[in-house]
Amino acid sequence: MTLQHDAAPVAPGDAAAPVNHAHELEIVEVVAETAEAVSIVLDVPEHAESRFRYRPGQFLTVQIPTERPTGAARSYSLSSSPHFETDLVITVKRTHGGYASNWLCDNARPGRTLTVLPPSGQFTPAGLDNDVLLVGAGSGITPLMSIAKSVLIGGSGTVYLLYANRDRPSTIFGRELTAMLAEFPTRFAVEYWFEDQQGLPTADALARSLELFSAYDAFVCGPAPFMALAHEALRRVGIPEGHITVEKYRSLEGDPFADVVVAPPADGESTATVTVTRDGRTVELAWPRRTKLLDLLLSQGFDAPYSCREGECSSCACTVTAGEVKMLKNDTLVDADLRAGLTLACQAVPITDQVSVDFDQ
Ligand SMILES: Cc1cc2nc3c(=O)[nH]c(=O)nc-3n(C[C@H](O)[C@H](O)[C@H](O)COP(=O)(O)OP(=O)(O)OC[C@H]3O[C@@H](n4cnc5c(N)ncnc54)[C@H](O)[C@@H]3O)c2cc1C
Ligand code: FES
Image (cartoon, rainbow, N blue to C red):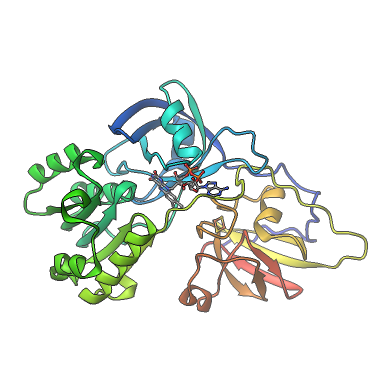
């Protein structure tokens, strides 16, 4: 690896144009999936293709037009498969009283553009040859659909989907799932749960449905109460925690599209020094102690990964290889990640005078 770091640490304000990952993508089609959900098909221009490569189960962050001072950024999982679909597809279900989902369902039209951040997220299978158990409810089907199609078409694993909905008409992708069942009769099975016929699911009932799949890798996505039941059912079935991956839907509170502004250190304020490595490139920067690492990097023109910028998604995770940092917020890294030295660049401030972090490890 070639070290390209500067002889003296670069002070904030000295360097290149700030990095911003936002792209405009054109809507090429809007498909009504149910009375309350639409799929929005987005074209990726050739020059941005490398930025928009994704893994099944990942999401885009979308900027919704608003007068609100905090903006309105929301994450939407990709329902398309990177293994055979060239356009990106997000599927949005109206949330009662919600701002962004209703705006998208009412305003998305072919020819209009959406401002988005590139794909991100960890809700993705380790490989496409593993057997996967997908447990979802309502709009939680979106990333599960991407995983199911990818495993069936791009891999050799088998897929079992348990899919709960209020009733049959509110079931997103019903027709597509029927077609997939016909195409992959030995590798794909779906069990529907309709609340209007069976009542609300219980952990006991779900565990009975899932008991044959204890050796599968499980992926769970849906409303919070359903996720809790499903997780409990998977534990009862005996699937180890390390083989259960969950995607929690929530609305972002801040604005990851906002320009990054880093104030230069005040007179007399000490700075730390950080050495940062990504894609084999290493830089050394002066790090004001109250500045979050990601803000520092983006403001200095260093292309660091991010999505939410609020400690929720782990897109910005990097390994601290020397020194110590503290995170102002962490809603995503678990104990094993912390033991491995991971931190969230969007929430990290320095503790020691010298810190080294690596995005490549
Ligand atoms: C990784 C990820 C992937 C996701 N994928 C999808 C997907 O594929 N499809 C999908 O449809 N969604 C998905 N979501 C959820 C999506 O990001 C939004 O959270 C969802 O669309 C609701 O946003 P909204 O702006 O419509 O609602 P919001 O405006 O955020 O409101 C949410 C709820 O809070 C209530 N509320 C709002 N403001 C207040 C207030 N001030 N006081 C009290 N209550 C209030 C609203 O009435 C509503 O019930 C995903 C989320 C994440 C994190
Ligand atoms: S960018 Fe999402 S956790 Fe840092």
